[in-house]
Each structure stands twice: as structure tokens, then as C-alpha cells.
Image (cartoon, rainbow, N blue to C red; front, side, top):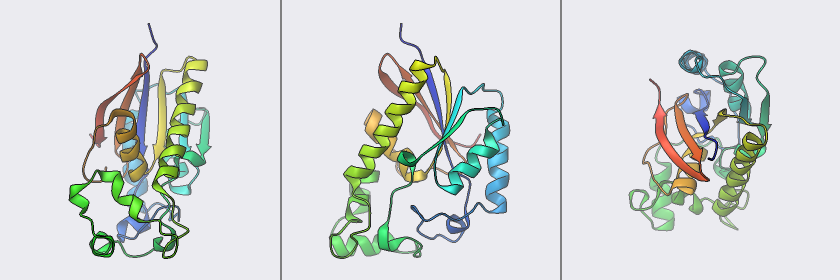
Length: 209
């Protein structure tokens, strides 16, 4: 029988860019005092789980959150594959009215397409050549996720802590389960993904309780 692997996928704590509703992909603001506090609260909620390994993206806000939640002696790995989506020229801009602007510019409706599909409109070879292409984003996420599963199987690990970002969490859910959840998961919330018999199951999404 295949071993069960539990992945607890936590979104990083609130940053100053989150608090000010600014676009934050691969730019990297620090956690606010509230972000630090809520991350510590999540650490308390997860302390009964014996984690075998801890992973995060290599962006500061995810690394900080992992350090808050994980025990000091837990092996920790920071992988670029789990970085947030790259917004290119829009990094650091105000998020107010951003998607309204994008809908008008590229003639689509956010509420009529899957959550992650709207990000394909960010890359433009003239207007925004430094943005990440959606297919590249999905490919690197799956590469990182496959690595975690392979390592867990190799080292007989059961419980994995992974700290990442809002868009990455939604993208992984869509990629591995074909399920879709509208709206962004809250900062410091946890999403539980179970891997068993070479299949994934989403146990819950974006929990703070």
C-alpha cells in the first residue's frame, strides 16, 4: 500500500505590501507586526504535528514565516520553484482597480475564467516582457511539488510543511486536483493536501482555525 504524505501548505504572513494592497509577486516586503503575530498563532495551531521536513519559497516573507512555524531542528529548504508569480512592470503598483484595468485592456472577465488563468494576461512581449509566462509558472511549481513528493518517499516522510504564496497555492490546487477555489486564501492560512496511491486529495483550503 502506498504511503500517505500530508502536505501542510501555508501562505506567508501579512506583509506591508499586503496591508497596503500593493501588487507583490517577486518583490519582497517584510512581514508586518500583525503578520508576525498571526504566523505565530498558526505555529501554535500546528505544533501538535510532527513535521519531517520544512520547505518554503526563497523569498524573505516565506522564509520568515517558515522560521516562525518550524522547530529549530527541523530540516528546512528554500526553493525558487515556489516563488510567487512574477508580475514584471506591475510589481509594487497599487492593486486597487488593477484587474478592472486588465479586463478593459485585454477584453476578458475575471469572474468568467479559472482563478489562475487571468495571470496569462500579465506577460506581453512589448508592454510587459519581464512578467512571468503562465505556463512557465505552472511548470516550475509542478517541478517543486514533484521534488517534495520524491524526497518524502525517499526518506519515508509523512508530514511536510510548505510555506508559499497565495497564487502558488491556488495554482497547485488547480494543477493537481482540477478543483478551483475563487478568492485568495488568507495570509498565514493552511491548506492541507494529501498524496496517496499516486493521487492527490485536497483535505481543506485556507483554514485559519
